[in-house]
Image (cartoon, rainbow, N blue to C red; front, side, top):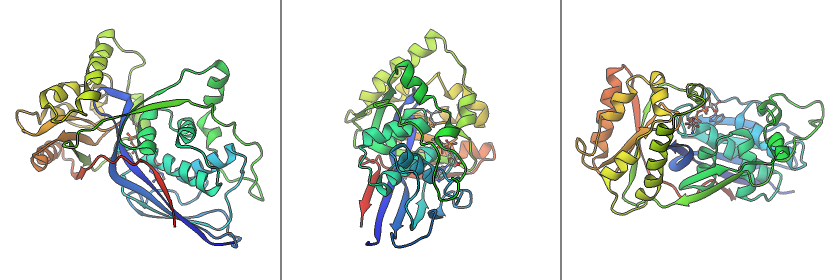
Length: 352
Ligand SMILES: Nc1ncnc2c1ncn2[C@@H]1O[C@H](COP(=O)(O)OP(=O)(O)OP(=O)(O)O)[C@@H](O)[C@H]1O
Ligand SMILES: N[C@@H](CCO)C(=O)O
């Protein structure tokens, strides 16, 4: 049988965009890329992994510990294929920094979905892959944007009690972190995820709006940043966010963009205030640039669970980035700046 080779390419994502906590995500022009070869005549097993780029020193190379290959195996097992094919070699090149709020784990999960789908020739649609993604990363914003591309809003369906119990399988059972017994056969395969858990819609994005990511050189784990949030919110704070989100999704699609409308519509009371102790100087940083102080600025927010700051602008990008970097410097924090484009194509597999 012939050697097969294909590439999986997944964009990074920024979620929330201010008031849209766990609702909206934006796919951006840093990518996680897997170059995959499969030699069916080889007896080599399991897959061989190597990494270059961001996280290369930290990503596990054991395919039973690595998030991407564990996800691929999950998709395979849910669909009746209970082992990796032989002769798989995966060269990962990663531009998405780990734990910075740019959806590195969502990208790793989405890459694993496409990898499993391709290795098993499963032919699953992106919509069905989204159901699998939501069994692993249980908030839809990053994975939906990474899979579908563009600026998307998503929700999770309220499920029947039976489907809820199928969805609430503990993560340790969905992605067991140990190799199978001899012969690489797993005992019991996980249940297929309920159908149609995740639903999404793509919003417009005005072509003038550019994205600046100011990436501090420290990590905040999403799990820690989520545990900082309260269990319940006041009606006033919820209404504050809902009002802004309703305006924001349309305001970001309008040309020319209205800076004063967007700046106010990107304010948030649901997650950013509770995360300020994890990101030194956050309230000052968010207030450091406004459309009045920096013409061309549209809005500023925490990217995902942080610590990256996302600024949207039509102009003056360098000055905006410099000001935010200066504010971080006052807290003795160095930053990397990326000037990014919104990508619309979403995650792709290209056969060679
Ligand atoms: N390319 C990758 N390969 C393997 N594991 C990865 C990869 N990218 C991310 N991870 C895993 O995900 C972890 C980071 O996930 P986490 O959810 O904390 O942050 P994030 O996804 O970058 O941020 P956010 O969810 O706020 O956008 C890493 O420490 C690593 O364990
Ligand atoms: N909406 C999520 C994104 C992080 O993955 C959060 O802010 O916790």
